[in-house]
Amino acid sequence: MIDKIFSPETYSMLGQWAFGFVKNLIVAIVVYYIGSFLIKWTTRLITKLLERANVERTLYTFLTSIVRVVLWFCLIIVIISVLGIETSSFIALFASAGVAIGMALSGTLQNFAGGVMILLFKPFRVGDYIEAQGYAGTVKEIQIFNTIIRTLDAQTIIIPNGGLSTGSMKNYSTEPYRRVDLDFQFAYGADLNEVKAAIGKIQAASPLILQGPVSDSDVVSAPWIGLTKLGDSGCVATTRQWCKSADYWTVAGYMNETVYQTLKDGGFMFPFNRMDVNIVNSDK
Image 1 (cartoon, rainbow, N blue to C red):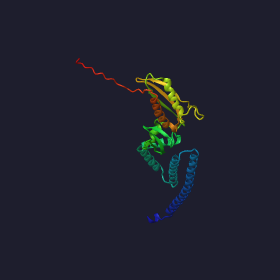
Image 2: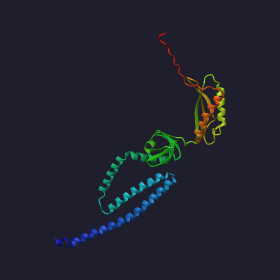
Image 3: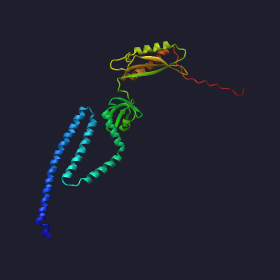
Image 4: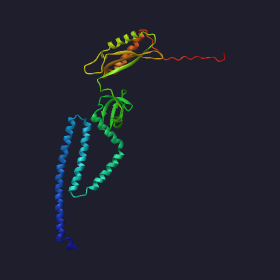
């Protein structure tokens, strides 16, 4: 028995196995160094291309990390295969784990996909004032999974990117100019021309209200005033005036305050809803 174990055939088989293993090990080491070099070169190339495309730093950092992990996984599988180890079981194991993780993190993956879409197509940027998912505020940070906005009363709102990328959204900062539409109600019997003249002077007096078209916009027009409704209690005059987007609330406040005070000082009556209650004595 011992003679068979230490026979020349056994030594020959061991020598062949050792030679094959050493050869495969040397090839695996060479593949490792070449593969690691190619992974570094590929990730650097992707980073440069994304930087030239003006992709958000958060996005291209995350994408290059994913690419690096996938490439290293492929390299490990190749090295294991070169060493002569069966790789089908490893691939099946990782595939099963990937499916399980994907099902467990379905909501998170949806938010991740939404974050990628937002960072790629840029429907809004940091600093924009948006309204979405029932909230309105200034965008403070765009993350991979969430977007953080701050409301006008300094509340921090965290909105998942999944619903933000697929739902409706208003971006008030996209256009440089906005139109301020306001309604003013005055009593029946007032002179419409006098009302329009008084409001027109207020519009012309504000340096923030644009008095006509501008060269960098095809929608801006001169201020407009018109009678738009005959209500139950009075007439409704609508005013439309353009201003820079940053001046929207200043112009709205100025118009409301100044129009009220001007019409009040001019003797115009402001109507209000009234209910008459008649009490009938049934005993008489």
